[in-house]
Length: 221
Image (cartoon, rainbow, N blue to C red; front, top):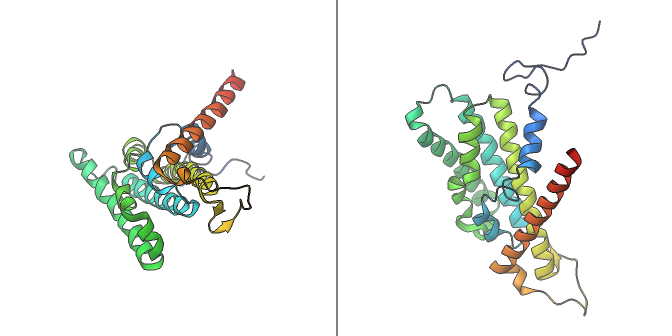
């Protein structure tokens, strides 16, 4: 007879993807507890680099890479790291992945490296990355920790991309160098590519996320 049971999780041996926690963890990081739009974490870099969609996408990719890699290593070493030095070890692991991404940008994408400036390096102190390592990876198996890192990175990247898209369209009339709004009727709004535009757009994104979450909660009741 064919075995119709769900496959066991490679990390912990439980039935289903990560014992049934994989999809829940993914949804939680991307939507339910979105680190930028719901938890309001990592807003410094979000406000600084989101004047262009391209910048937002690269910054989002950096956070995904660092979150997945650091969560994996922290989880693998969680039973071997002395409790008294765990945070030092986490910072060292996070810094390693940040440096790897930063060097990759400098080697293959120099113009973007100059545009992002110090903000890639500041991922080391980003509370999203440290928070997921401390709150999740230390208590969960490697595969599920990677899912959590990817989910929170994707949630941050998605919110950042939305902010970057609207700021670039309204600020310059272009998206990644391609004209979208043009003609005599359109006047570029310089406010949107300056710091106040970042605050306004972030506020709108937070409001929209919470409106949809409120509707979702009401439907469940």
